[in-house]
Length: 465
Image 1 (tube, helix red, strand yellow):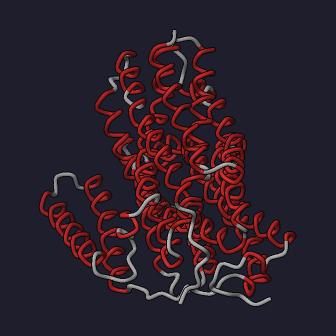
Image 2 (cartoon, one colour):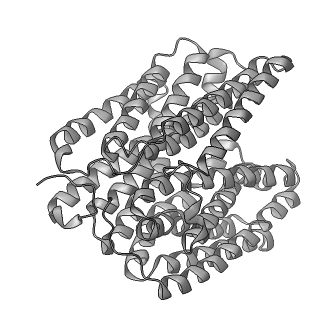
């Protein structure tokens, strides 16, 4: 069997597809597991390294920035390297970040390690989704994406208990083990690399990649500098201006280059335009879940540990509903999964704002939120882009979806942060009620996608020429 840059899933026997599915699953799972492990460690790192609470949050901010960086960088290199090579390179960089965290003698090493982990993890899921297009036939892609999407729910079920068991022994051991878990994936890849797709036949925008990389590194430096030297207005201004200059120059170049890192032209067409809008709304809605533990502490007078445990129904619902989202996407339509997501989420947020505040009602609403988020995030968005995006831009748009989701998450966090006042239950309810409108917007956009999908079948598999 020889590799090809074209979409020819028939070249992969069913048994080989199943083996590659396990490889993709564990590649995504390892990078997702790290996210769930860090939460319990933040207070420990704060005390161990003697840093303020606000500075500890840099470990989250730099990881998220790294994810956006990797989501843009990885797909931008597929014209020169195999998508699978870049995915494994992302895992290698993630492993380097793990080892930097594991052996960090100072807090600054933790910051650099987290940034590298984010860059590595950011390239894994978009390129993993792109490989789904090459390995699996159209009628199986939804279920595969749903299964890959379930790893985030599974990681939050496995990660915190694993952290609880190993932290008393050594928190450093957690990250050493994560780095070691990557080795079997490399051994498997080395054996089967030859049958995976070659680099896509498209140009690589080297100057654009350099400008984007410079902007991301400068943005990371600004975040760190404003935490360590908040009174250095000159230094912060210089870093801010350099970041803005790189972003503007890069943005202008994106409009002209034939191989953009942010693909704007496909956004003019349906259903890609509506799917990108739903991705932004998904991030906006997902941001509200971050405020649920504080809401539970205020309403039910529990501690944060108990509040985190009360989130289990949401996480379990996400893990179980993600494969169902993929099945609906394959058997019915991606629009069906999105329509159900809009209905479930709108009903859940309306319920949490209007039903009596009891534990039973919260668990009921939590299951609806988890199921709705799974239907929204697991399979349909990435499936639509795999089916309808031009071949040279399938990987780029997969990375762009990560960008849109994180932009939505940022705006949702700002909305909830401005709405919610700690200790005032009514403000939480107002914030959750504010999520009904974006949920209904998802429903409307999904109905539009359903109409477009019925009238516009996906283009035939294109050869990269």
